[in-house]
Picture 1: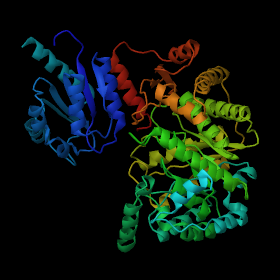
Picture 2 (picture 1 turned 120 degrees about the vertical axis):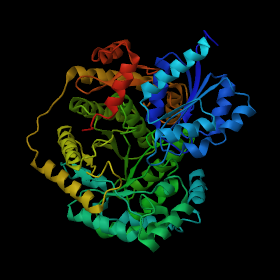
Picture 3 (picture 1 turned 90 degrees about the horizontal axis):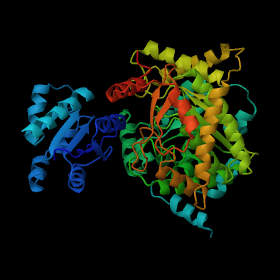
Picture 4 (picture 1 turned 45 degrees about the horizontal axis):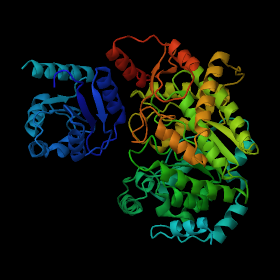
Length: 141
Length: 455
């Protein structure tokens, strides 16, 4: 998986219609040279997994703006092993809690759900820079 | 029995709706006072009419809201419908209305018109004897519009494109076209009884960096879809762009092209009016600054000679405004319009020529589609990306057009996707922006451009 263009499946999880951020993520990923499969707003976890399998994606980038992502992502670990997706990088970002919450509480929680990278209220470009560095790291390893 | 009559029977026989007495409804509309028809008001007024948004769940609170508006000397009353009714979930609307009535807490974000029914609502509408405009966002508005017209609400906002692409992810667009065709037919039929029923399109769309050519093409198409069914009074609309020049150019070109295309399909007897929406994007959280933004919008509405302005309130950043706050905004807007006199005629020949050329190119591509009816041509064009609305959540939308603001805050197209505009027009658009090679900087610029009215 070194040379070919990386494929990303992205979308907003659950009953969340925050389309502006979703479009900006799409454009940003394209600008960084990724092939993007954007499932848009109001997407369920099963739909994300289906798309990852169908497109043979390298990365799944889920976003959530209304803070309800936790309820939607509990089954991730199960689906990940069920479909043998251990090579796919799982990323979640946005506003990951309803009300105020600390990053040091949120990040380990989502990592336990099966995400490799967790961005709670992190600026879009900082998040994507971190993702690129993470991908680079994997190649060199 | 005609197909329409059969459809009508099915639609109006609904356990959550009034039993429709069509003979009585026709008699009511035939004898309704002229003051209830905005088409009549438009005809006999040369000022900009002022209309807020507003809707509360219970009859009493809605009545109180209208009373506040009346004190503010309002021109057009709004009736904003709750979100359950918009999605045809009349059972939830009924339950939430009961809870609102019992507990005096608003459990709905608007007036559940179908649940109240036309017999009840008509009492309120005829009491205030002022035109009422229906504001909703419903893809399948057939029962809602039957109820509205029977209630004495003679202006219906919306359309198959403008009430779908900004609001829905996967409601089928072809169904929306057919459901709205029903609405146009009913409006046209009732228009023969008294003054015409006015239809209004929703120009703001996603209110997020939509370029004028896309807004106007969609306004023209919804206007044509309405006129071809026999509607005689139609309002095209757009929202404040963030650049005064772009607002003025849009109004001039919209006025000109609307008349041109109406004439082209043999409907020049229809009256076309222009509606201006005060800033529809994110508002500042400081209420005094919001007042200032609202006042600026009013000045621009006067400059573009809008026939109607739809007002915001200083509570916009926080949620549904109180009725007092809403009425105050109406009064302020009316005052600003009253003192704004001696406005100059402004135009920009180069900008208008470019915008007009873009519109004609897109319209030509739509009308040249091989489908047999206008709604199918419009449907195919959206599916093909010939019409592409920035930041629409709908799965059918292409999302290939990218726009950005230039130094004067005009919205410019930097990626045209499948938009069939000429190379000359595209070069004109791009010549106004100097884009950094750093894509990240461009995206940061777009983020700033969306929040252009923040303090």
